[in-house]
Amino acid sequence: QLVLSQPPSASGTPGQRVTISCSGSSSNIRSNNVYWYQQFPGTAPKLLIYRNNQRPSGVPDRFSGSKSGTSASLTISGLRSEDEADYYCAVWDDSLTVVMFGGGTKLTVL
Amino acid sequence: QLQLQESGPGLVKPSETLSLTCTVSGGSVSSNDYYWAWIRQPPGKGLEWIGSIFYNGNSGNTYHNPSLKSRVTMSVDSSKNQFSLRLSSMIAADTAVYYCAAEWGSGSSPRFDYWGQGTLVTVSS
Image (cartoon, rainbow over all chains, first blue to last red; front, side):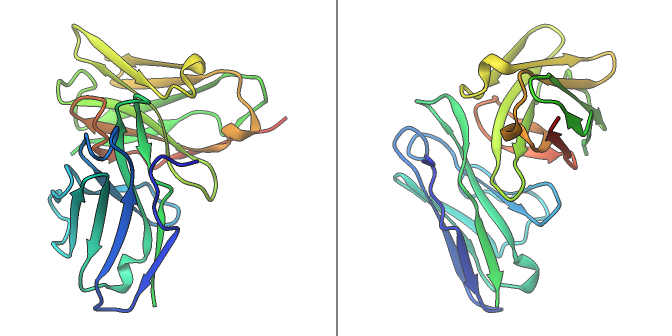
């Protein structure tokens, strides 16, 4: 049973806005910063969002993150075909003393 | 701009110990800014954090995934600008792509800024 829950899949058409959720608990998301990663098949993950809503240099502003209570979200605006990838949330869990990754969400651009 | 590269065997027999090394370029493993992490991904599955290690030449610290802690040993070799992972008592479920990564900050804040390309380790007799 995963501590961080993500929908296994999400989809949208080009130009649409898509939101991927990450549900946790008071010992992880409520207490700590959330991070998001993008992974294309056969490649290493790439940091997309850090500290809930900060974008590293080079990440388009179409990608945004938010957090409220025990849940976090990644929103992709103006969806593009090249956004088709797997997306993972990550957070430290104070109770388990472990870095937790969500199960990942496979985004399909229709 | 850090670059990381994993090296090690692609095939390990059950019950044996896996040894992987990550070579860092573009920066020092003795940096005050980074922890050095290992993360794995079984084929077709999600990411699992193994642990993180910090060493600045004077002091060090490590964090391990409790589910693997008794099997995990991590170390830093500043003379070679490398860090390493040893995972004992390998079983088939340990088959995965193993990534090394540079973790900004505290070791308990999963900001993995830089990643190696990953190396597939298969456990089989």
